[in-house]
Length: 316
Image 1: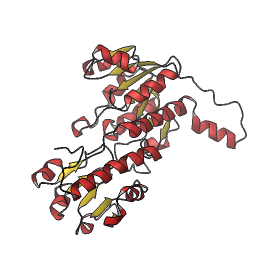
Image 2 (image 1 turned 90 degrees about the vertical axis):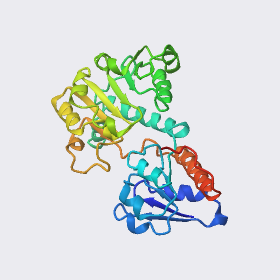
Image 3 (image 1 turned 135 degrees about the horizontal axis):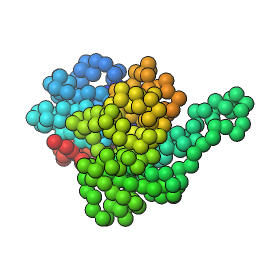
Image 4 (image 1 turned 180 degrees about the horizontal axis):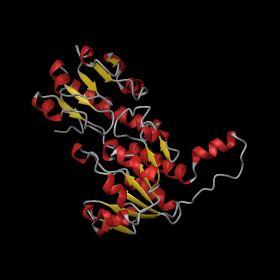
């Protein structure tokens, strides 16, 4: 089996997968640069796109049988074209260790913003003690936008910090209040009401391309003055220019971003110059436990392909 990892992002993934494939089959794992994917497709059976676009051009150029995402997001894959050509498309659901890892990372971003971690590190290096003055999470209202696999472990962690948790979801049944420990649950149509009382907005919903830029100038302006925005879902949810504007104006107190409207984010993007932004390079789910779980699922699907069975978690 010839397996192609597309792009240099997530560099630990190929070795993790190799550890979970049977050595007897001597599967070949290759990694191509970010550009020129097409020239590496000869003889490839499985394509793992990571952050790369697998569109009609790439699909027509190859003879692979499976597009397997290393994670949940498939917005970069032309699923319809793949389906029409009889190519399987599969992902790894954001559950288990992956969801737990992302939840932990969301907590890191929240606490780092509240305690102004960048300034604290600068003060240590400058010999300044007893500053900056931080803020506590206890008693603050955290709005979980999307009550799914990531939100649940995050809610449990927030409860331990005695935060007031509210949620926005399509399903506002009473069970959500108990399961997530919510004080209030709002429908998507009631978003403006929820935003008005929010101190921390945490985006953790599923994503589709139709949702691109849904958190734009209007939505950010609806947030309570002094609120923070945390994005551990998909970067396309936020309008980057609108976020920058609201941060510079002082309407928003800060942002914690693990995903971006363009990935990788250009190093000269103005949002990276702001002292009230903590940015991390799409590492929310990049932990030992999460990668081990993902590698097992991907290896299992390669084995299923080998014996002629459809992959788990296929879409389209």
